[in-house]
Length: 445
Image 1: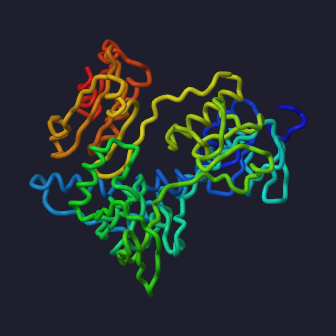
Image 2 (image 1 turned 180 degrees about the horizontal axis):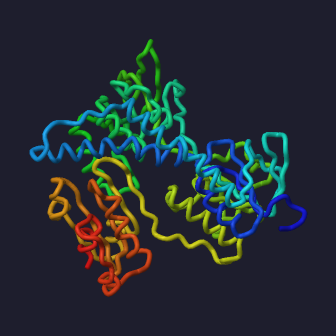
Image 3 (image 1 turned 30 degrees about the vertical axis):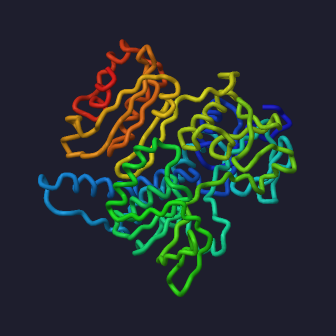
C-alpha cells in the first residue's frame, strides 16, 4: 500500500459487487475497507433473490401437488403470514454472516453514506474522510417510480415481500421479472391480480413464444393482463385505490405495486463534482471496469452495460476486480455466458445464444417438448419446451427452456457452453441418474 493512503482499496456498497471481491482481496494481503449505509448483502440478500425464492417455494410445492392430483388427494392452501415470517427467519441472519466473513478476512467495515470528495478520497456521512489508492463503486439499483400523479400511493417490491396480509385485489404495473414473479405468487396465495403492461407483451428479454406460454397459464389461473395500458394516474378514496389507464378507463384495487423496473444509484455520490461519466443506465466504464477517473472503478448493477444486471454478473465483476488489483490479471474483463431465470410457474431460463439470434446466425436448433421426457412424466409435468442451439461442430451455444425445472436444466448445460465442449467432452459427463440433469444432458449427446 502506498503510505499516503488509508487503504489500498475502498469499496462503496454492501452487495455482491463489493463484498465478493473485498473478501479475497483482503485475504491476499491488501488493506481493504467497505462502506455502506445499507444491510450487508445488499438488495439480493435482503430484498431480492433470497427473500423472493423463499416466498416462491410454497407456490412451487402447490403447483406440484396440483399436477399430482389422482396420485395424491387434496389441495394446498398457502398461509401467507406464515410464509412471510418464514422468509424473514431465513434471511435475518444473512447480513451478520456476511459481516463475519468480511471481518475474518480482514476487511474493515465502515458504516454510513459515502461521498467521493476526490480521486482518492471518500467522506462518510459528512464526518470522517478516508483515502484509498483505488475506489470501487458498487451502489446497485433501486426501484423505479412512475412519474405520474399519485405515484406515492404505489408500493415497491420490498413492501410486497413484507406484506402482513395478502390484499384481495392487487394492481401490478410493469412487465418485467418482478411483475411476473409477484403476480405468480399473489395469484397462488389467492389474490385477484391485474397486470398493466406498458406494451403488448412482457418479459421482453426472454424468448416470446415461451413468455406467451407463461402468460397464458397465468391468465387461465385468473391473472388479468392489460396490454398497452398507458397508466397515467393513481388516486385514493378511503381504503381503495384507483388506477387510471388507457382512454379514460379506471379500475379499483386494494393495493398497488409499481414494478416498472430499477434505476442505478448514482445520486449523492459526488460523481458530478469529479466529472465521472454516467447516464440514465448507470456509470460508464471501460473494459477494465474503470471510470474516466483512473483510480475509481465500478461494478454490479450500477454500471451502464449490455450484460444482464444480475447477481452472478455482479459477483463475476467483483471477482475480476480482485484479480486485477491483486495482479493475477492485467487483461480486460471477458464475460462468460451468464444465465438468467424468471421465477414464474413454469420458469423460463436461458443462457447464451437465443433461438431468435440462432436463426440470424445460421446456427442449428433442436427443440424438445418437455412432457415427452420420461423423467418429467414422473410428476406429470404437462407443459414446457426447450430449444438447444449448436454451431456446425456441435458445440452448444445456447439454451432456452420453459418448464417447472428450467433453472436446473440450464445450470446443467452451462459448463458445455462456457467451456466449449465438443461431442467427446459431452460423453465424459456422467450425471447422477435419475435426475433432471441427466435427463437434460441426454438431449445434447
